Each structure stands twice: as structure tokens, then as C-alpha cells.
Length: 223
Image (cartoon, rainbow, N blue to C red; front, side, top):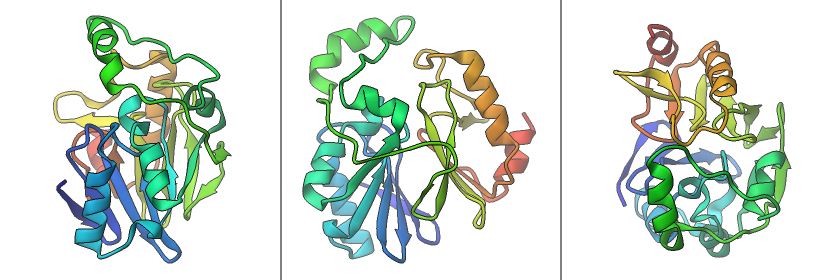
């Protein structure tokens, strides 16, 4: 598994379908998202090799939403680390299997149905359920619905860093956007994007694609 330190104390682990971030804090390590099923060993190997830290140093794993590419490795990571799993209270209903996840739109729906037995993640319990304004590892929770009902972002106003999950992606061609096929409510998603664009950001760390910064706000507002 490859990765790099994007800014001091924040590592970007690549190669696991979604971006997983490792945040180094005074009380241990926090993961933002857990990647696809069967990729946990790569995440742990990166932490041991590049940070010189043990799996037990991971105290918290924040799940920005319930899609499999973000939660698939959560159970394996929790088993290896003892970390608590954190998600929005609304999204926990899907993660815990109390509600069925809605299927995506368009051709990807067929692909997902055919490959689901290979990539699905079993329901599991969320340890801590959060909502708007709560704090996790020194970061403020922002409820940014649209991509999913309980999507969250994590904002550090001191360092001006935003972990946006899939609520705000960025590319040169599309600017700030969300996945059209995988987004449940496009209108609410656009409202959440505008809210996040209004933040004073130095770094945008999205769930997919390349981290944006320094000067993330200026780049986002150009489009």
C-alpha cells in the first residue's frame, strides 16, 4: 500500500478504492474512512512502515458515509486495533443493517448488482453516533446530506483542513461536484457543496481523487 504525508500529521493512504487518511494526534491516530473489504492489512502496513506506529495506536475510525468503498474494511480494522467506529446517526442505520442501502442510478446499478457478492460488507455496530457540531479528534462534524442521508465532513478550523468524504469531490474538468450515479439527492448535495465551498480552506482532502492545497478555497471558488 502506498501513501504520503500530505501535510504535517496527515497521511493519505492510496490504492484502496477510496482515500483513507491517517490523522496523527496527541492521543493517538484517527482514520478517516476504512476503504474496501480485505484492504485493512495494507492500511495497517503503511502505518507500521511509514509512521512507525502500532495498530493499537489507532483509537478512532470515522466513517464519512455507508458506501462499501468507505466502510468495507471497518470490521477488520476494529478487530486489529480496538478502535471505536464513528458515523452519523442516520448513516449508522444503513451500516448496522436496520435500513437497506438504496441502489445507484444508471448502468452502474447493473454492475453493482452483479459484483455485490464480491464487495459487500456485512452489517456491524457503530460505537459512537455523531451529528452536526459534534467534535471528533479535534475536528468538527458537519452534516452534509445529499450524496447519502447521513454524509459527514470533518473540519479543522485552526488548520483550515476539510475531510469531505464524497460530499465534495474536485477535478479540473468538473470543479466541485459529487458522483452523479451514486448520489441519492442531487439537490441537497449541491446545497452541501455550496456550504463546504464557503468555508475558509487551505486543504481539501476528498474521498476520491487528489488532495487539493494549499489554497483550496481559491481553487474551489474559481468554478
